[in-house]
Structure formats: structure tokens, C-alpha cells
Length: 87
Image 1: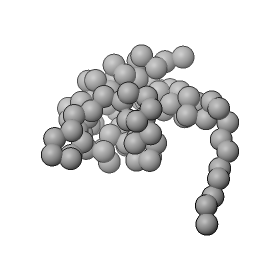
Image 2: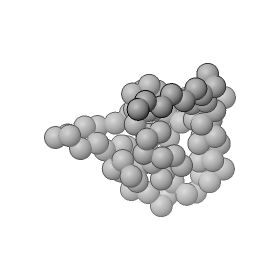
Image 3: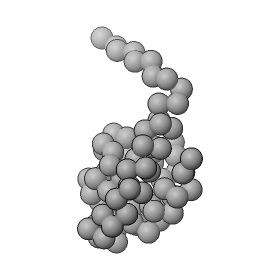
Image 4: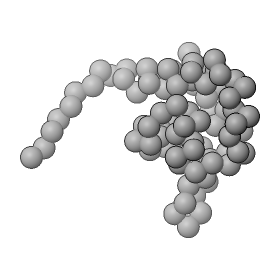
């Protein structure tokens, strides 16, 4: 059985914009996170699900480091990436 879900064209852009706004409104919150994070911590930092994080890696050029199959994300690079996606 296959399920097809049709989402609006701007669905992911809107989700990204909402995450950027959420993080921007909680700027001091960034200090609670380590300089390099795994996927779970990164998703919390960005205020999104791990599924959305994976989509942003594939489709939005989210910066990451991959070593032996493990993903690590630089908090500094994520903040720069977020700033570049402001609307």
C-alpha cells in the first residue's frame, strides 16, 4: 500500500522560516548547546524533527561533517546557515 501526501509548494520554505524565527527569538538559547552536535541535538537546536533535519541536509545544503557514518554539526556554521535563510 502506498500513501501519497500532497503538500503546498512552500511547505518546507515555511517550516524553515518558522525554525529561523524561533531560534532568532531565543538567541541566548544557543549557549545551551555544544559547539558540535549530533543529529538529535541539532534537531532540538533548530527546533525541527529529525526527518525535517534529514530533508534540509538533502535539499537545503545544511552544513555537516560526516565521519564513519556519523553526522556532526557545527553550531557556528548552523547559525550562519540560518542567517542566510532569513526572509
